[in-house]
Length: 334
Image (cartoon, rainbow, N blue to C red; front, side, top):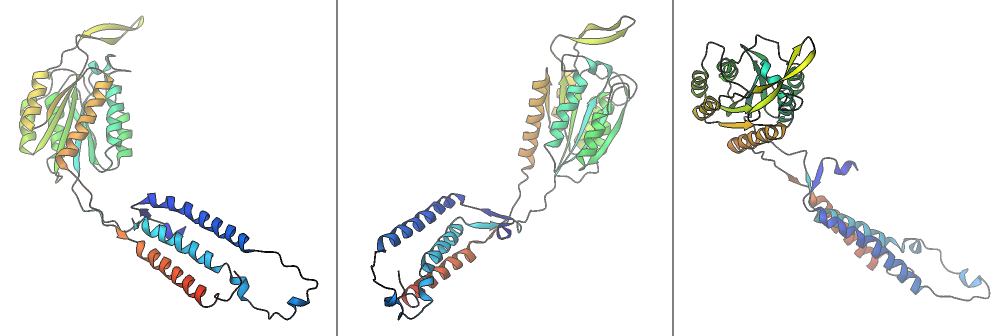
């Protein structure tokens, strides 16, 4: 019904009382049948002198009015509230840049289907679960660049994220450059929280900016960095293209956890280690919760009560039923 468009109910449990209406009507019908009797007349002349009246036709008006009054009263008890008038406070969101390693070692298959693809899929889920935040994407290998600037249009971001692959830039692991590029995207942000999620599976061996220096820059701009080391413990299968086709080598996992931990500590973030798909997914969920707890973004909503018109309708119908029963229908056939 158009009356209930944009309406929510504070106490919908009262709708169970609607069961009482057909019970009340059923009881009324049963009572009417009990009051009916048989009258034998030799002819119909006995009725010929009865003055025609409209009153008998309205003898069921009372139960109709009571039924509608009961329905209106139940709706009023359920406390309808207008959601169309809810007011959201203006809040500053969170700006997040994901800095992802796309070096050759990210093709190792200790994650399924490999580290790079697993990281992309799980990060995309994370992005889609934060619709109110501006999120950007930086990729790095031997150097770094911005794949997507901060945006609220997550469909564009997801498409650009899905397009990243190894070989887009010179191979290597420039952690410091990746972090510095991400911080550059956040330095002018006016968001209440500025965050970088940095994922890598190796040690810094390229670029002109040391990782710790990039961390100090991040700290100066109020950017918090969550670092994630990706890779199993020990050795991981790594695909190598040979004349005989793809062959697998056992590659030692060499993550510079000390540096990643230091980056997180300097910037007030946290270091995580992901050894498989499930662990990486859990890490993103932890980061999601940590940021929600830090910002404590809440929405204040003002609800407008709409029960009064229904209460007035119920009262009016009951009053009308009372008046007609004691005046208009007082002498009617019941």
